[in-house]
Amino acid sequence: MLWLAVPLAIVVLILLACLDTRKPKRFPPGPKWYPLLGSAFQVHKARSRLGSLYEATAELSQTYGPIVGLKIGKTPIVVVYGPQAVKEMSLSEDLLGRPIGEQRRFLVRHLKEFGFGTKNMSILVEEEVSHLIDFIYKSMDGTDSVVFNMESLFSVSILNTIWKMIAGVRYSPEDDKMKTLQKMLSDLFKIIHMIGAAFSHYPILKYIAPELSGYKSYMETHERIWEFLRRDLESHKKGHDPDNPRDLMDVYLNILNSPDHAESFSEEQLLAICMDMFMAGSETTNNSISFGFLYLMLNPRVQKKAQQEIDLVLGNRMPCIDDRRNMPYMEAVTLEALRMFGCRAFVVPHRALKDTYLGGYFIPKDVLIIANLHGCMMGPNSGFENPDKFIPERYLKDGKVVVPENFLPFGLGKRRCMGEALARSNVFIFTTSVLQKFDIHLIPEHPPDMKIVDGVTPAPVHYKARITSRKL
Ligand code: HEM
Image (cartoon, rainbow, N blue to C red; front, side):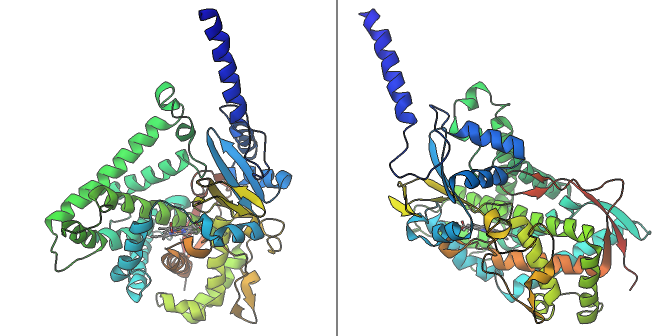
C-alpha cells in the first residue's frame, strides 16, 4: 500500500502547488506566481536592486500598468500607482476596509476635546517648538553654531504633541526615556514595511530563523513600546478623576468603567490605539520635517526667500497657526516638504469589503490594496514639473497658494489621514520657527546621501547639518 501513498502524496502536492500559482479570473496583471512564494521573489529582487519598495512597485507599474496584482506568500496584494488609479481606489466604498471601525469613531469624537484640530492644538505645538528652540541654543553652549543629526532632531518634540493629547504628558528633548522610545519606534518601522514583514507571510520563519527574519527584534521592540505605554497607563489610573478627564486616556478609562461599554473597548485596545497614533503620527511628521530640512539645506536660495517672508511677517514674534494665511511662501515650503515625504510613501493598506472591480479588474473580498503615492506626486503623470526638485514656487499663483489636485500626501476619501491638521501645523510651525532663528548649512565633509531608509514610512538616510544662529 505504501508504494501507492508516496506517488499519491506527490501528485496532491503538485496539484496544490499548481493551484497556488493560479490567479483569480480578471485579477490585475502582475509578475508570475510561484508555489509558496507567489511573486515575493520578483518584488524582493526589484527592491534590493532599486533600494526601496516604492521604487520597486513603481517599476512594476511601468511593466504591468497602474493596477498590479501580486501575491506575497499566501497573501494576494494589489498595488495601485498613478493619480487616476489611486483616486479610484481611495474613493471606492468597497475598498475601505480596515480593522479599527469603532475605535476610529471614538478617536475622531474625543481627540477634539483635547485639542485635535482646535486652537489648543496650535498652542500645544507652539509650546513644543519653543522648548526645541531653547534646546538648540543650549546645545550651542555659548557659541553660535552646532552640528545636529537632523533626522532625529525633531522626533521627541513631535511625539510630545501627540502624547500630550493622549496621555497629558510631555518629555524634554534630552529625556533618555523618550529618546529610547523614539529610537524603538524608528527601529520597528525599519523592520516592517507596507506589504508586511517576511515573517508575517511565512510564519514558519518565526521558528526556524527568528533573528534572520527580523521577528525576534520586532517582538522585542514591540514588547518594550508596550511596556512604556502600560507604565503611563498605570500611572494614569492613579490620578484618574472620572469627572475631570484630562486627556484621551482618561476618557477611555471612563468608558471602560461604565457597565454597558461595547465589547471592543478594553485596556489592550487602548494601548493599541496609543501605538497606532504613535505609528501614524510621529514618524510621518518627523520624516516630513527631516525631508524638508534636507532640501532646505541643499537650497540656500529657498531658505533665504523663506526667511525674508518670516522677517517681514513675524519679525521676532513666534509663528502661530493663523500665520499660515499671511505666509504663502512658508506654506508652500510646508507643502513641498510634505510632497517630498509623501511621494516616497504608501497609503495605509485598505481591504476589499466584498468582491469588487477596480479599473475593470476583479478584486476578491479581503484582498489588500496599497496605493503607492509616488505616481501622484513625482511620477510621469503627476503633473508636477521637475518633480525631483524642491520648488515651493510651484504652489504659488499671483501670491496665493494653489494646491494641485494630485497633491495627496494624506490620501483621499473616507480613509484619508485623521491627523492632517496636526501634521500640517507641526510641519509649518516647526520649519518656520527654526528658519526664523537659525541658518541650516551643508557640512562639506558630510554631504547627504539622498538615499532613503525603506520601511513603513520613508526617512532620509542619516544626515548632519550645521545650525548657526541668525544675526537678526
Ligand atoms: C506628515 C504627516 C502625516 C502624513 C503624510 C500622513 C499620511 C497618512 C496617510 C497617507 C494615511 C492613509 C490614507 C488612506 O489610507 O487612504 C493616513 C492615515 C492615518 N493617519 Fe496620518 N499622516 C500624517 C500624520 C498623522 C498624525 C499626526 C496623526 C495623528 C496623530 C495621523 C493619524 C492617522 C490615522 C489614525 C490614520 C488612519 C485613518 C483610518 O484608518 O481611517 N496621521 N495618514
